[in-house]
Image (cartoon, rainbow, N blue to C red; front, top):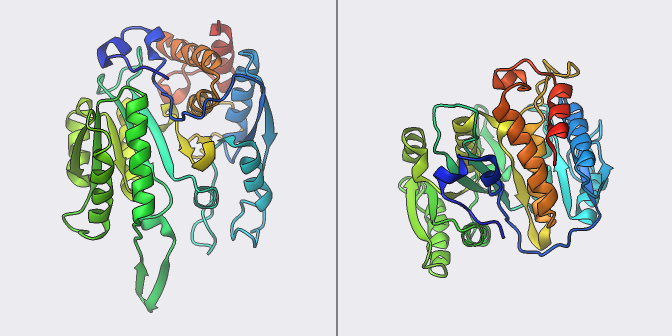
Length: 365
């Protein structure tokens, strides 16, 4: 299991960055050849997916990619452009990597990302956020992980028009889902030598819904007396993150709060282009993803930053037990960013996607 070093030591050398995307699965996979589903996605997705494939091949990762594209028409079996075949690929291989996807707004069918999370029962979204050496932001003490419940809450998709001009949207919180994500967060903290869990909520207003979520967190907490536990109201949490992100460690929360807090946390370290993410389901299922947008304005121009997708893939590799390969790729990426010569435009440089990819490959051990 990955051991978390102290925050200051983590930022001193690249070699100590290996816990950046810590272990989140105790499935005990062997380090051997495997097949993974790959959704290149839309916009810049195919470009960054190609870059990641090149980096992984150069690093000797024993992966065969099962590339999947979503349909151009809605699949009636899923009510989404994500097809049954797309879902079956992930279920078959148990692991996957997804580029950014675009869902047309207000068309009456399910979001692509929501379809994947709901149909595959990807109940937890995990995003490590850590200040990177050599890349200066407003903060240099960020070392936190957000764990977001992924299947219900305000994203349950239960909306209807009561009367013309009045729309009702239902927030659903269940004991099953809340307990499941709380257990995952505490187990993650224990396995990665994390010291504290923060439950984020709005139970002062939504007393029954968020109250149930907190009740489940408190029940799970009793099994982990060695881990500190606190509860923070979501608006205060946002303020505290901006004031002093170093006070947070592992944060667990319902769906909507997790969507907001995880993006805010990514902004503290330089943006979504640097932030890895993985969705975890039952029976060892893992779908890692780049959570930034499709950036259609730069699509096809060789300008996109593949870091987020590559780092998310590293979470997938650790999930499969390929620690050596994951460490090698991660160190190469962090070295290129720290050196500063081949940073892409979003990081203040002028390197192309191809330049960055070649630099990472040349930095592999």
